[in-house]
Image (cartoon, rainbow, N blue to C red; front, side):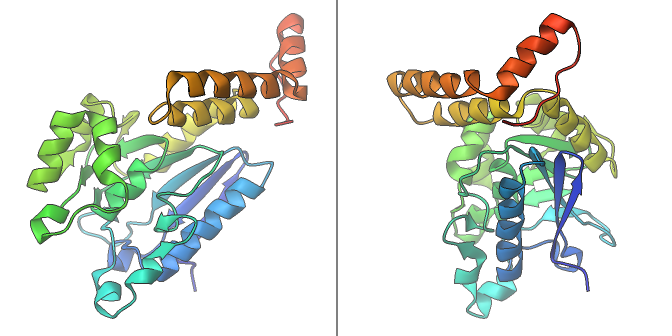
Length: 261
């Protein structure tokens, strides 16, 4: 029997795949615990530097990356299982981690599914994809970060329209607004995400992880805090073995051999 969340390593990249296509990849307790476990693996493996979050849409006439919370699970009294202590909804949206994750979306990402995407660091989407927070149409609110992450991703005016109407917006629109890094053709999204991941992996992993940390902190912290954080991270990166390797490789005019140390 296939895992409800699959984990595959390709070189320096971990591909994490939601695998409930028959339920539109909706988040139930098994998905939440499985996704948290997958992030644990990603963070613990020193040989893996970046992750991709994808979804199995096989057999779906209209592909859905993730439809959000499993309403059947909620209706049967299992709502609490959709969250974990460390990760929040889906075991992911509030999870602290050092390694970047790219969302690879081919289809609709709505409600909690969109919030999973917004919790990622970059986004590759197919031209047939769409995003939305439909909660207001059901007298609910997006409770897994979407209400503050979507405005950061596409701007307040566009986010307000999407949130208050509950209407989905296209991947093309998301790309134009700066939410999507790369648009690709249907059925090619994992390859597109791998291309981006491999480009990231050409950079030094310690510098990538430290830079990500500061960029995320810039959304909430003061300039003074960010200056202190930058100085601390800069010192740690500067004293690493990879910095010596990077400088030596530059002098010797060869590609660096990063070790993440």
